[in-house]
Length: 441
Image 1 (spheres, rainbow, N blue to C red):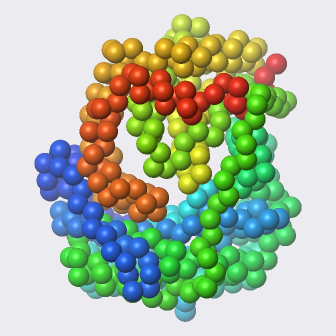
Image 2: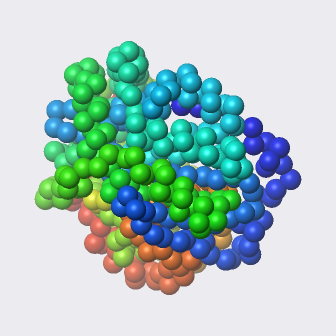
Image 3: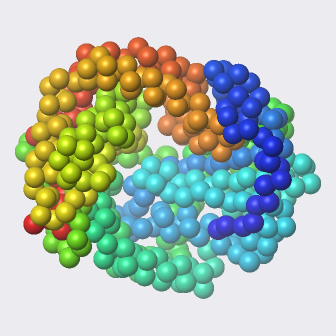
């Protein structure tokens, strides 16, 4: 749900640089405090009085990978319906009250987690009612029958439309190909969505949105005592479950040969994806992979893929690569779009560029440039309450070290070219790559 958020005057006159927003030198770290609420929820707090704003986020292990067998789409639909009627208020009352308070709810669901966030002014007369809405949304969703039916129909219609687009077909085939029967690879369908019931939504909420499984992140204009009270109130009414917290199964054994899936489509451009499950959150190889990927395809116009595929040969306007760490090993992905008639040549050159990089790694000049950019741009990831919230919420949910942000630059700087080659050799094997081409000839 979206509501009006009149922060323009509040933000006017404040610099967006990290130093001024955080009220500290740009090189200083983020002081993350951590404790456990009486409900069992894990709490992470960054105190920042530079602006009269509080950002709050609750995360649950309730992402799409936790859809029960035969009920693909349940996690996303549950998350979408949380703020469409909760406690004593219907969706209209919630929207109107948030607009009156100048507060904003947000969040969503990815593979691993479902999130609900709130931004509000920190004055008690505003903060209190806004937090009460957030508490009801996560703890007491109503899932009204008429709203469930409406949103179910809307979601099905949106999926049917998306399934006509080549980028959607490519992404779905890519994840299904990489993860086979693992929950990361399961895709919702119009049929699976149509089969969901209100009881399914209520059961999923009771199973996954529990106090003991909650991670609460607070950033902004609060004292430690106030933050403790907020976390206590937000999680006190969450469902209590005797069931063990849901976990994801390990990945199946990797393939012994590369797989390629070609899907016909009338679009003028071919959509190409190739990659494989590669790295989980907290893996010690993450920083060598991050630094190396900047040179391979993550550094924009200075990356090898862009230079070879785009600049020298004109096969694609945009080509990129990235790592996406998850609870279980998330994908290494290379993506590009090209003319149908060039798809075969573009794919061959992309594979050749990857093979060369795997063999040689970055040059010392490329390594230096990657570190300079990654370290130099890092403060921009912390130049607002919202960005700090995103980073700290990830640290909390994935149980990463509390000094992760403080040591980011150090961990980047100490990466060597040999580290990059070794890490890529461990996590990226051409013989295990999944390739999807939609629309190519």
